[in-house]
Image (cartoon, rainbow, N blue to C red):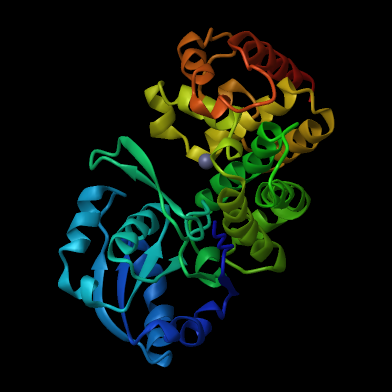
Length: 357
Ligand SMILES: [Zn+2]
């Protein structure tokens, strides 16, 4: 079994390393990007590629969805097929599309995340959708991308909402993975991952609010850089090492449950919805200290702490949501059976807690 931990360059000078890192893999690259990401990064990226001595074999937009149709289009593009390496420039959906393409072509892939919302840039899986946007499947690969160039200056200027939602998903990584792994005998890799997941929680609780505040001005700070790295690299490291059983628990299961209400998909972000379930899980699991830390932080940065924040009535019976949640596969591997009653009780308690805090 092989383990590939994330490789990355980070900073406003991250693209300076393209030559020394990617140069050994050949002389030509195909740039595959999301439209907005391309506009946000090309002024930095094009001179950096030139300076690195690499020739651009192709510049092409990946499409608008992480779909197999878009992968197929890239596989039919001779300039992509003939390039020595692929560069994926964009958010999760673009990167996931190019990961699939690079795997099929067996070519080295380098990622250039232009937002910090998920760990897609460093992980070895792709979340694939139908062209219509409906979820299709998760595809696993043998290796993650070779290296990620994380330009903090570009991410600092990306829309605030992505980083904010990314914080929600990242906090959940610690909350869920420590829960689902509890009591198990772990391998070295799994233990490494579960311990790394602390980075997804405590440093963010400590300085995350300041980082988000500074980001509003488009400036880079040490706190912002740390936050970006925790969202992309710490979460990615956990994802790569802990394995399927320990990657998620109640927070993601509830996210699937909530998604049966059409307004959730329309008006709310994945990380936002997941964060509510993560807070709920802490309360249900009676983890008082972490719950209080998280609750206060959620209030500071306005992550959801009650149903009204997700446009759901406090007395909504939630039967439909809970029916989907309790049978979700993310709840198959948890330390005790999580029932609809337990979740309902925690929802009520959380609503009450909101009235006094
Ligand atoms: Zn997630």
